[in-house]
Image 1 (cartoon, rainbow, N blue to C red):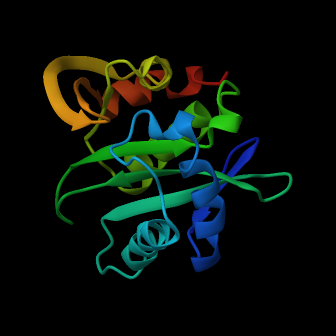
Image 2 (spheres, rainbow, N blue to C red):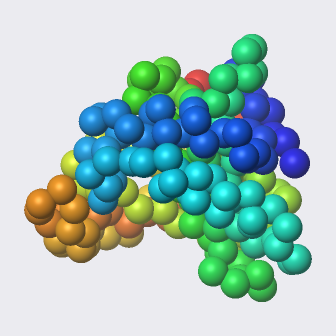
Length: 186
């Protein structure tokens, strides 16, 4: 399966993708908002292989795609929609991007395409997401896409030697439908 935007191709992961993922997941900028202190080859291979295993689920209810540049195929991140169970009408959006590609609108562009997939193809009613409260760039992505903040959870995540607050967001199918044609600028 493949999804295309103006600048990106969201495609299924393949085994060799681990090298590109390791490169960006090893940067200090990336690690700031994740529980890992460092990333090793085995960690990242397992990470990518989990997404590859999801491709053969029947019925499939978890989709995590490699985000690649349309012009040269370079892998710059991942983006996905996951449901807890196949028959659920809601899912969770998640995304990550190579820090070298931040501030170009790629995360918003990939997430917008993933929402389209969630509401049109998977016919979900609700898509939720969460982010570390201090990750301002991530919460801006969600807000640009029309997600509404549902709440703040105080000190819910322990990582990097401290407690972090998380913000909870969601968007409903009719909210997305009412504004989907207006999300043009990433």
